[in-house]
Image (tube, rainbow, N blue to C red; front, side, top):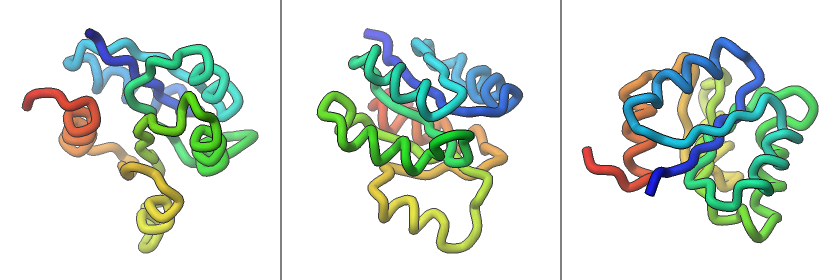
Length: 125
């Protein structure tokens, strides 16, 4: 069974970069460019295995998207990894305290991203 991942990123260059980084994993990749699209695509794809969620989104930001995902029964258990350029002291702790499963700082370190993908999708090293 192929895993399905939702990448939520408003910057087209970053979205392409993350998508390209994930090519070795043979995943079904769905993308969304804002929070509303992310919520709709999550609702339309109940078999999503993991969500990579940018925090700095237009409209509703990533933390609000996360709260809404947790409120909806169908998406409340999907692992969500926060992706943010705001990697200041205390930011990771704040996001983790909200209930995010994990955190990846921008610019994204491919090795770190791969560790998270393997961990949450339970893939062999």
